[in-house]
Image (tube, rainbow, N blue to C red; front, side):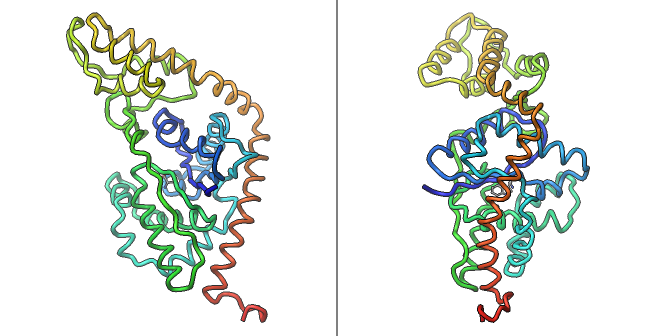
Length: 326
Ligand code: TRP
């Protein structure tokens, strides 16, 4: 049994790309592994500087995850800032991180290009992320392709720390699922909040239906076979097993298929798929105290693990001056 660990951005409305890209995979992990999962509200400070939004987004992300199947009894699920040892660890690690390592971060460069201010939080984002992973002994880290470099930075930091101070940290392995790497949005580009092309999972039926109806399609004549390397086909496939997928291929290849009909069917399929989750989500919305209790308990469990690693790191670095430790 390995320790699987990952952080989730509290970035607002949950969409299909989040779910099929990473969440569902993580939730599946909890059956055979030990799952550590947390909402990265410290990291979110680099982009959300509004008290109400950050608080709401944090709680919403927790409700999303629990309703989609994360079991807070079985797994360790918490909010990053409830285990503030990660901040101390960030400082400890900062002293072995060369600036060159952070200068090479493409994520940092992309964020600047998008107009974010070049502040220290944004720059040291990867060091905080390394703390997140190392302080809980994460062995496997499921992340999207865009986080690959951050994982390499974490490994670099851990190896360097262990070399300088002795074996304190576990070296984590990234787990990047190639098959679900790219989930298209309604315009055909990668589904992402920053492109404004997402399909939300929980929301008004009418609005979501509208999103499905506006998935881009080409103007192939109705009697001609349709291309299957398209957003509509790929999105639909997310909900299908192999034989159902074959049927869909046949449908695309047969004359007379109307995109509008397929979109309607896809919407129905989506709506049914998420029905039980939607019920759970509504329940949690009315029982926020239940959610908060789970998060606080999770933080307690996580904190016990973090304490072991941080105290080993302190000792290894010479920050302890108890007679017994000298
Ligand atoms: N940077 C990650 C993202 O944007 C979130 C994250 C923070 C994370 N800490 C982590 C992911 C630790 C995995 C492990 O998606």
